[in-house]
Image 1 (cartoon, helix red, strand yellow):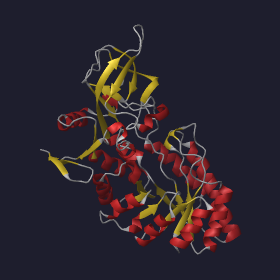
Image 2 (cartoon, helix red, strand yellow):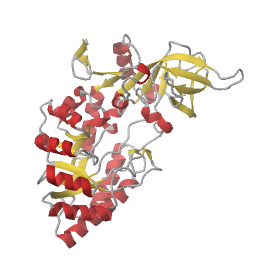
Image 3 (cartoon, one colour):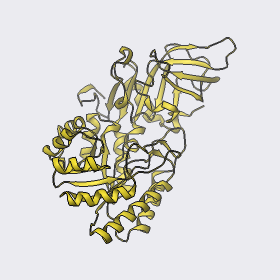
Image 4 (spheres, helix red, strand yellow):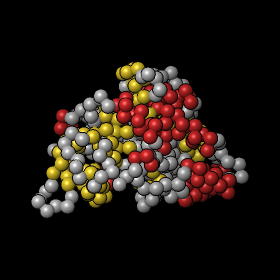
Length: 403
């Protein structure tokens, strides 16, 4: 049985239950105070790092405003994210266009809005940047194979071989761009700290060879994300990540360059609780040992990262503590792929019935932002944000003032 207080302490849980009890399900409540603490912990643990929050993890305006106030920069994936961030009065100098897959028109749009730092991993994209964002800083993303140790791998689609990265940075200089640095991403929810060691070693090779052979002195390493939230699989504490990564950097670089982090999951993951309602509990035959538990949210409405059972969220109910049994957890849509957990053998109370609430912990990242729009007619899952003063909607409008 999953112990709720291993993930959410009593005080936080009781407050959440009090303020969320009258809201229709499914919904997500995001605790802004937890995000603030996570940000402060990150900058205290990596005092030399520059934080560029990955807006895609949770693009709610209350989150953006909070992190802006705390001093964060922002990693942007699309012009729509850019518009949302700029609308909060955030300077384009604090923004990086971190998506390596972008339209020519979008590059020009970012440049027009004042953004001057761009990621790339291909010759065609680099040429487009040179034409539409002249004189800008570019950093090249290198390919990292990490599928076995990251819960949500990001290999293959993004990045290029270090030899190609070398050529792209030479081409950047020829095209009048500023060859600024190297980026990599070791995979989201990366539990093997050693993956950073391998990536930093490749980066060191590029820094050294480009300076010696091409007179190109790179200034920055963008380490992307990868730091964990708290799900069922154990991870090291952030302090362990910091200790090892700092050692890797100091071993490879006599003078450590500017370091950028693009945290998403590690900042907002633990802040969210998704509340769902049990729609139906059934068995497929009279002797089946497993029950099917169908919920009012699923793979297409907030829980896409359960695809392939990759992210294993802590799941609790109001009836925990009694007899339980294995369940298969599935969503409400007319799609046979809408199954969250079948092989993971989650256990829920035997007296669970229709109408009972099921709570998904650590769901502050990649839930509402991944949710479909209108599949089977189900609306996007509602997300609310709260602090000690009020509950807010995703646009920072006050839904309810709190005592």
